[in-house]
Amino acid sequence: MRPTALAISRTSLALDAAGPHRRLPRSGYMQRPPAFHQAFDGHLLLYDVFRHADGERVLGIGPPPRNLLALLKASRTVARPSGTPLALKLYASLSTSIFEWTGAPAGTEALELQVADQRFMLPVQPNHSDALSGARLLSTINKNNDLAWIGYWARWHVQLHRTDTIVLFDNGSDAYPIAAIEETLAGVDGLKAFAVIDFPHAFGPVDPLVRTDPFWARFAQIASMSIVLRRFAATARGFLNCDIDELANPPGDTPIYDSLDRTRAGLLILPGIWVEPDAAPLASIFDHSAFAWTGTEKERRRTPAKWVLDPRRPWVGNLGVHPYWHSIRGRPMLGKSFLPDAFFWHFKAINTGWKDAGRASAPIRNAGDICEDTLLRARHAQLRAPAYARVACAI
Image (cartoon, rainbow, N blue to C red; front, top):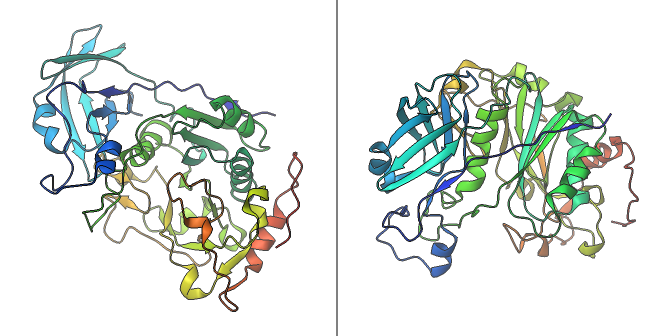
């Protein structure tokens, strides 16, 4: 049976680029190169506006307000068509924020928001958490990754972890249409539902002048995780964050979602292992299965961690909790758990240069620096043969 394709609309909002108001970077007095300012999103306020899973509140997900905080606090919001004034509370972190509007009556279709002299009408989108209750959800953001890579990544997590729902944000791919991604996911046996969400916003720059959290200005990916958590995964069995170049290992042959029951707070941190681009030429590689060589222990565990979360834990309902790339901001003290064999493989060669142009060009080739990862090779062998033809490649 083919999975259900969820048709998802979003409500986004940006200030007038010609107007006087814009978001400023951290340490704004410091001079950045022009490329930073070209990639920095100073005008977007909201990536999405939707009903909270409780059916009462309305949430908005956006970048951090920074210097726009006072402007937003002075804004006025009215529910339409009722005309009911709404109260706004902001939950901000370094790279993202949640807008919470309370008092919206049943039947609210849109919010009329006035910020300074600008007025916006924001359709309120539905929440899908009830329909996805108990889902084993996997999410990522994509741009121009090979469709065969997307297919292998999806099949891996469906077959080895019983993932049944995928939410994929497409960040402006121009190598193929969104329909091609949808068709790829529709062909994954065992998947029950998926959503491919058009998300063509600025990805954001690395800040060359900030030592602590230099990736703070990459708002889009961080915000997409909050959209998934609050709009799709609020009552899911588990929410796994893995990029297309990352494959989670099932610890003890147990699906990663089931491992959450062994954690204190429902948050399992997955250390990463680099998988080296040891096959050449890379242009002939069809998918992750061509790679099963990792570096020595010193080299292999240098990739940052990822996570899997049980969104049903009470602490996750706090809107001051924000998922980030490598952990969860606002988690309880001692909330992180680690389990033996709970980790992920990070493939250097599954890479278009979208975020890291040079990663696949410098494999470790000195004798003794790499070795075959027999567990990874065995996991590749566990996957059923794909429906499409494989390109042969010797390692």
